[in-house]
Length: 266
Image 1 (cartoon, rainbow, N blue to C red):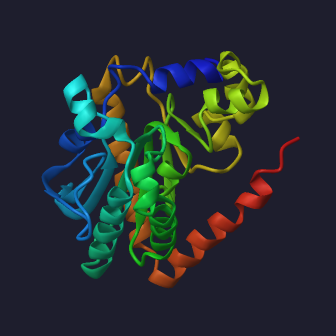
Image 2: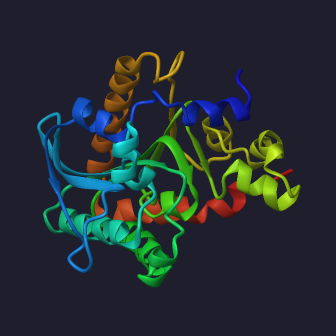
């Protein structure tokens, strides 16, 4: 079994599949929608209408970019407030037309720049969490790489939360945690163990629903990983469609409420 720190390194692997890779392989007819209707279009978050097995869905994901030029264009997957406001707009559109919402998480965190704070970063994240928690359509979130802090949680409140086996999900990066606890980022591996931020630990804690086994790693052989994820999401959607809206919302509420007991650490 790999260590938690090894999971961190694999989650950040340069050749790991990105959101747009999953969008092109799992879905068809992905029509990207732009803008937050207030300030601009944040390319760190990409979203729009798509089809999964012929069914219309709303697809939203954080895209980090592969090349240097693409990474700069997408701000390394670190969204500004307009990115989260775009997510809110798309989620509300999905609810209006009774479409499931599928989100893909891959970010170090929300962009921490002064401009983002001036334009309401914290408020945008908080509003996104509130909107996703109350959506009257099925919501499935999948962590495909890094899931960092509120930047990930903003599109991570869902009926089902999945993680690839080499992905990570945490309130803070290992380096950030180490800098606070030990005053040095060199203790990042120790911090990652303490944070229990890999998929197997979070599954045992009851914070996520399913883990998609990557085998040797999605960066080595992506096709079987994507096939497993597509089957899982399809199964989860079928389960959620069998519930009434009230049943689905109650289950979502109870799931979030249960985290208090899940997080008692021994």
